[in-house]
Amino acid sequence: MGLFKSKEERTEVKYAQAIKPLLAEQDGKTHTVLIQQQDLSATLYFAISGIEINKDYTRRFDYLLTRMQDDGYEIISIDNEIASNPSDHKYTMYSAFITYK
Image (cartoon, rainbow, N blue to C red; front, side, top):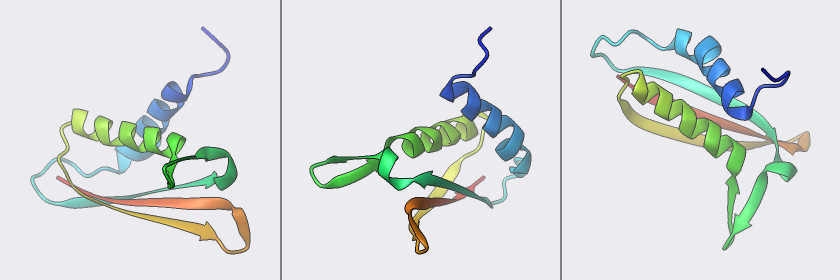
């Protein structure tokens, strides 16, 4: 067993310890969860035909949605917001408001 965990293992631990306990029971009602992540802007983006993509956030967020669905949750909608920190433009805040059943 290695000393350091892979990104996938760290993401699974974060889901299991920080996110899953906050999800409501599957009771047929609609619920929401807000996921936020702050990243260094300069190191995470690459451009394809003028479109900027954050690879790490995309992978982590896709993993979260996949895990929620694997756990039996139905994703109803996702509202995303990306905001720069006005006092420190090196960081970007990613927010995802997930509505689920």
